[in-house]
Length: 536
Image (cartoon, rainbow, N blue to C red; front, side, top):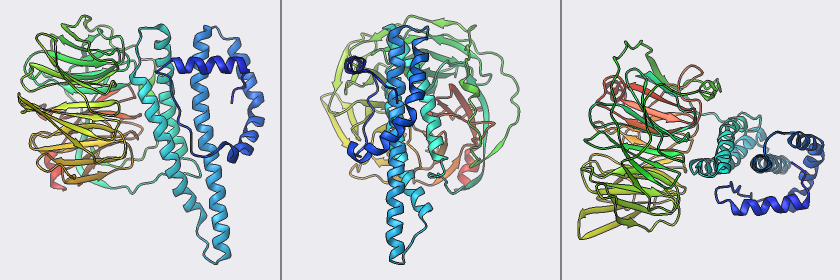
């Protein structure tokens, strides 16, 4: 770990307290006395290397403030992995001690397998916490102060390091993550890749009005509209000063709604001209559990993005009532009102024509993570880090009722409506739950997975749930919890980083499912739904 003087350490701690967006790495349960010997060994072995590192930093051309930010962030990441390393050593010793006692009693167990299971669980929990903290800081990125912009970029780099580290620890000789491979004969075809963003893509959706285009929201402070058939960027929105965290389209007009880390939501109009579609090559691939044999960063290069597409810089409406990051926004049925969800623990309902705040929906105990509206009724569901999601009913103008759903044990990353009377919720607790609006006491189905679940999507006609995961996978389930398929992922195709969002577009003949992630790309898939259901 870096060696600091007492004065520099004190000033750095003061600066960390002043910056609300700085990472706050949660300490482990182990005491400092228990690990003092191990820490001394690590410090003695690392002191020389770190002094050399400080010497190189002193020779750097970077301004002092940027060097300080870099040292803060990398030292926190280093401490987190040091804690993981120390915990693994402690657990290893405990397991060996347990095996010695069992051997003395004639009940020795296979220590390697026990170590793998125990350490995998511990490391998975710790890395999950780190991943959540990095994602949280990254979504709040804004370029208003110059230092904030640099901080967000550094965290963006840490984000890639963090995802790779999950695989590093998972591939360690102590920790082996292996899951039973299952195959499906249903056909899932990767049709098109949409590449051009300079940073990770948080959200995507397809327009509901003609012409049908794909919209993406990115941490690079832009939103883009794409031709689904050709993969060409048609328009770029440049009106936000922070990470664009979500994008949704008006049900009948050429209007988009975007939410941002700059604490605003924007409504902006667009006009696009669709290019002539080119013939699509047949790259049909069976849906199966491909071996994750590659960790290539092809899409993480210094892509310049599409520079020749037109841009929109000024919104028609700006919604400013929130006091924190606006993480999501959606249109209510009819398109005359919108709802926004923020890290200030509130969701706001606005009138589109007047931009006035109609209702402030409060009650969540922690930051909101998502919001969604019912396609046919005046219903809103909000998700939160407080492990709950809430259903807000605006069907009766005189009564605005709310129902609280408590079924998860970690952050609820999203909750979405189906066309009928169901809500599907996904969580960082690695589960997806299906709820009946008429009986909200307990879920009617629970899907258990091996990775945190991000923004899910449910197809309209067949109600197939698309689950995007932190571990780069996308899985398809039906409403009863039966697994239907896993989208192909290998060194040749699929996402190379965390998958942030999925979105169905069943009316499109070329691509009926879209996904996006931290690898800076969106992918269009063609899912053979009849074949998928035939395998059920």
